[in-house]
Picture 1 (cartoon, rainbow, N blue to C red):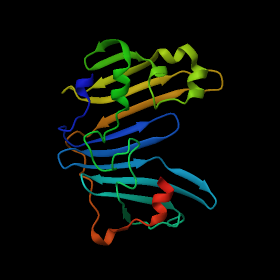
Picture 2: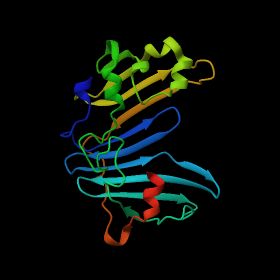
Picture 3: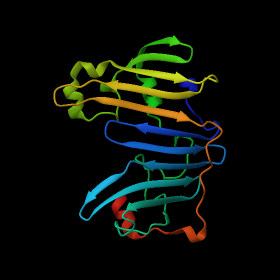
Picture 4: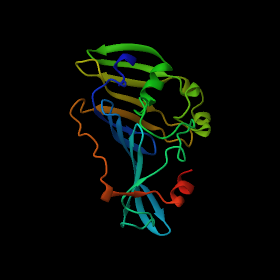
Length: 216
């Protein structure tokens, strides 16, 4: 299964991540070293508006766009904002630019902590993962609610005819006040996804200082 995970030599592809309380989608173009990542909408009340954050990353340039409804309600430009990737770093402190690991690694992490893996049919697998030993999926509160159930969470994996990962689905049971739910990652449009379009000079502007304060 790990062999089917996209790498830095994979053709362009699209992905979607649906977690228990958020979502993310994007296009990873390894040949051109470009990634476009769209986060799930955020809803605000003062003033009321909805905002979608989109990142566009190359190996040496980074942009961020805030799509507001109603437009401009956040007070930020609605153009692509070119930002200093060193001032808005990744969680590990590295500059936020395209890298070979821009693809969502959640599936890989599940595989690394899995056991009882079996092949159910051609290209289809199932197994269990120990979420109590896996960071980034559940809060400490939810892990406590699950108790021993967190040690053996079922998941399924589907590969295409070429052995490439197309989906990983993890079903987390409810426990106490924790509602549980489904965590799903899909990979599709290998080699056929549209290449992310880099902004022209007219379509971009320099990120204001307030953006760094907001996102740091």
